[in-house]
Image 1 (cartoon, rainbow, N blue to C red):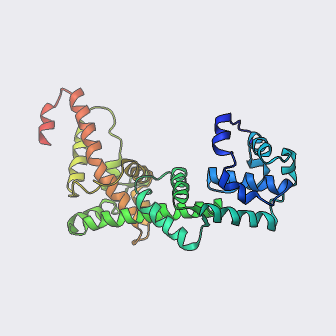
Image 2: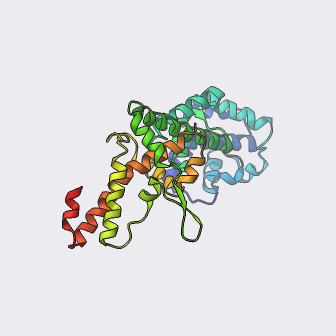
Image 3: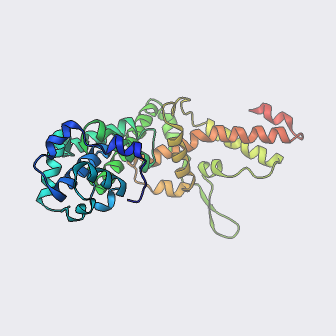
Length: 306
């Protein structure tokens, strides 16, 4: 680690405290220096360094001066033997931490899914919250690979929960659910060249408006009526974070209706993506119509038909 450290940071985080000196008693040379560096690093970061490379040179020199051991002695410390394992256990006991057990991982995953992942979908940001929670609960973070698995599991659980919640709101409105299924119904037909063209309602809603003209305005009106005919509740996504909605919309936008139909019937994501794209379509089409109505003076009465 090459990051430079200011003196005030060294004093605050790398000074051996009075209640820690008893832990050092009886240790000599590289063992003494290595133990204190493990202790102060763990106190600072909530996890142990994996080797000398993770310790700042300034911190090594600062601690070495306190314990009266040459800084070069850290090169003799054994980072993989029984001694370092004993030191880690001694430090955990002193600070009240414990290694991440299976039950800890399950509780942390559930907490992330309920408290973080329903609003935050970025893997790295969820990982940061996981590490903060571990420190608050005095749990030593597991390996990087295990952390990634926990974060992915929490993200998945949160999306399933959101999807089930939204599906539950649609349950009383069977008509809306049936119309959503019709939204991606097979409506293909060959074009003049004999190629199959997707003419589903969803394909219509996703189509770009094009240049301002009477024809484009009529097309946008057709979109708006098709979307409103679904009859989705106005508060369907009231408690879903905007960034989550944006992610669903982006995923739905790149899939054609035929691809959405190919998903398993019991898959949660395609349904939610269909709901989101359809629900968001109302606002999008309305904005397009507003813009076209403001730019066009040929058919002002068309706006009144809405």
